Amino acid sequence: MLRERVASNIYVFTSELYAQVTAGVIITSAGAIMIDTLAFPSETKQIIQFVEERHNVPIRYVINTHYHADHTYGTFLFEQARVASHALCRELLDTRGRQALELSRRNSREMAPIKLRLPEIVFSVGHFDLHLGGVTLKMWHAPGHSPDMIVCLVEEEDILFAADSMMPLPFFSDGDINDFIRTLESLRDQSFNNVVQGHGEVILRGEVQAKIDEDLHYLHTLQARVEEIVRRGDDPDALSAIGIEQCGKSRIPLNGLVQQLHQTNAESLYWSLRKRDT
Ligand SMILES: [Zn+2]
Image (cartoon, rainbow, N blue to C red):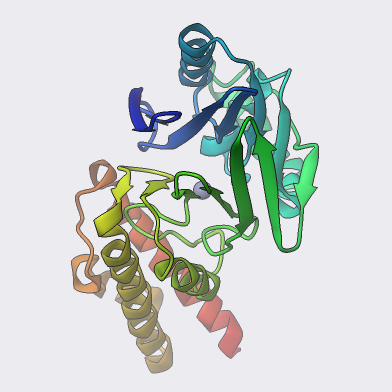
């Protein structure tokens, strides 16, 4: 696990075990706030140890940015903390998340001890502010990657935890491409000091707009290409002609995992357009 300090009181932790997934910690005089957890309990435990030993404060709140396993599987380790999320996240954790966890627990010894923990504080409209020890964390709904996604802004530092609304390649097979475009457009003209992605590197101030423009270009290009294939009545094999690089993205990030994400994006869009047309 890698640790990076992005402000005097804010840390980002990046997994070395699973897809460079990230988690954040905000230290305040009244305790710490954890934004997401890492996929493997062993890595989340290292974060807890760091916060308790180095800063000697309890972790008071855990935010689940969305229900996906790689961001929520560590939540059960925070028995003393309150867990907050969007209302849809709680609902999806309780249904799809519960089923997926059963499978993971059966298939992996590392995952066997994980228990489902549902958020007890949820919001569903507008934004939700958490005030703790002089820090304001502003959260709002940002669907696209998944229906329940939220982003979290540390107001005092202008640092945005974008979760999977920003990752090396926008990935929407569990969400909706048009929601994703709207979410990115709404983030595009705001100024952030740093953006912490749900996977991969922290994006620095001067790079945020270019990164969002590149993501929007990817989504628009992919959408146009898949629509053309569906319009021609081609079968899904034709999708292999849409290269990731033709859509303006590199095939290298996340150790090449992005290529698989790209393929899944193309397929899910193809089938949702086919369904719409019939
Ligand atoms: Zn996700």
